[in-house]
Amino acid sequence: MAIKTAERRGERRGEKRGREKGIKEGIKEGEKQKAIAIAKNLLDILDNQTISKKTGLTMEEVEELRGL
Image 1 (cartoon, rainbow, N blue to C red):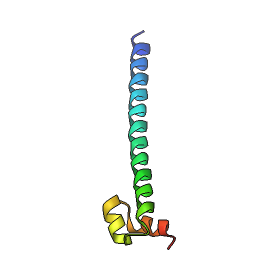
Image 2 (cartoon, one colour):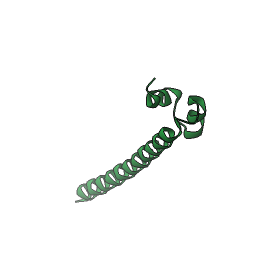
Image 3 (cartoon, rainbow, N blue to C red):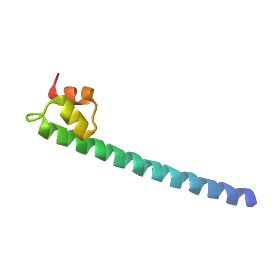
């Protein structure tokens, strides 16, 4: 009986960690998508280096958005 209880506790703990990790990853992905949307709006008025600095995107990511 004690083993089953411990297994259930372990499963719940694992599920909780999985949910927390999923939430963190979702937030991170959302932030990345927001940075990309902002960068797209800045492409016609700022240079790649400034966009990269202000959005946190890499130079390569900005160049890819610009189509270079």
